[in-house]
Each structure stands twice: as structure tokens, then as C-alpha cells.
Image (cartoon, rainbow, N blue to C red; front, side, top):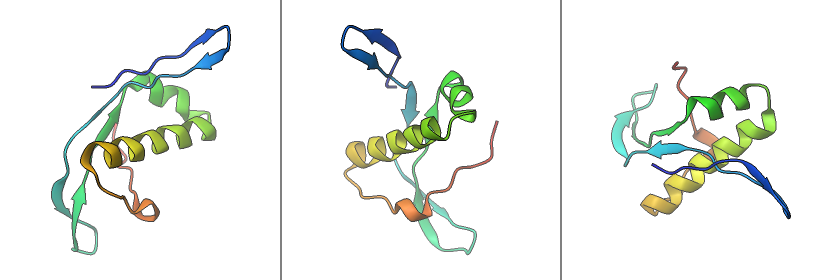
Length: 87
């Protein structure tokens, strides 16, 4: 688990976003094609803050993509990222 928090110091704002990620797992897309799924889970507080902010939503998405690419040495197809509608 990685922890990222927000605070303000003398030089400006510093952000941290708590999240967890899992290694890739084989799955199938809606068309039945084999794909690899990487799960990135954010703390509920981060998700609640992002609900009203497209900029913060984009930041969470970029954080997830960057974390997976760096941790697992992969390049993700960012045009085909899917977010499940879970609570």
C-alpha cells in the first residue's frame, strides 16, 4: 500500500494519495478477448474528493496508470482503460 497525503508547506501544496494495487491477472473483455487486468484501489476519501473535481479524477487515473506501469514494467493502453462501477 502506498500512502499519499495533502498538506501545505512554505513552498506550496504537497499531495499524497492512498492506494493499493495488485499484479496483473488474466481475464476477458466484453467481446471475449483475453486481456490482463490490473486493480488499483484508492482510499474512499480520495474517491469522495474526486467526485466533484474532474482535475482530481484525472489525477487519480494518472496515478493508477503510473503506478501499474512502474511497478510491473508494462505500458498500458490508456485508450482502453475501464473503471468498474463498484461501491
